[in-house]
Length: 377
Image (cartoon, rainbow, N blue to C red; front, side, top):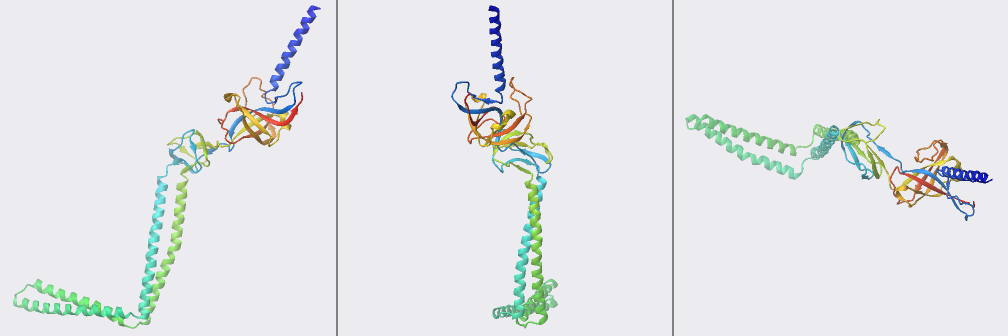
């Protein structure tokens, strides 16, 4: 009889240990805080492992064109803003092309301005031909012509005097020839002044008017040709600038550099799967949860949740469910706990942490989703 009691006691003890082990094995990815028999009802919480990640997901920042990196300007852990330069690809030839294209535009614009001024000159000449010279112009031309006459007379007399002296041997041939040259120059200047005087006093002739009109039309045609030429040159500038801009690698978001994959001097290509750096927005974090298939019916978008981590002891980081997957699949990650079941199927759930809460990216955490149910035991 005594032996029977001993056997019974041992059997009961083994049953208790088995029950404890079974309960512990169910705690990973299962309902937590289930109230024991006799406890007051309280909200049920579904527990599951999770992994911290940026809400925006990680972004590989790569190059749009192939080339060699001249400079990588950020390091891992650096904060970056949207549009900030991350790296520069060697671009001396492209920068030179931009300079050349801009110089071409400047040259054409200057020529266009000259052509516009030429039109004004041609129109003024046409008006003079058609309307005749103004009285002031006629008086000015007449005065200019008359001013040349004394010099013509003076140089003539000097030339005659030098000729007489040359014949008597009192001056050299060079002096006589200089006097002749001075007189010829004076006559040419006077003749030019006389032609202008005659021109401003003459009435407009049909052929003169026609030539003036043709000169205006030609100048206007030349000016019009600059429009398309300048537009084409400006297009070449934009193309060159666009190619140069592609050598400047910029951050698409405001966030943090998680990984720096390449350094100065290394080659880059748009076909590469990995970028120069990896960035993410840490202002908003979420937790990717592997929910056990036995709990999928209890989870819905909008439920409150919190996460804990061994490194932060009893601190709870609050959030809410923002996405519940629709397809069961294999686990995304493991907790590396001895009691973890690796063959179970899971549903992916996303929990968005409340603003202002910071956790390291990639940190494994325990998540607790408040289902709003109650358990009375």
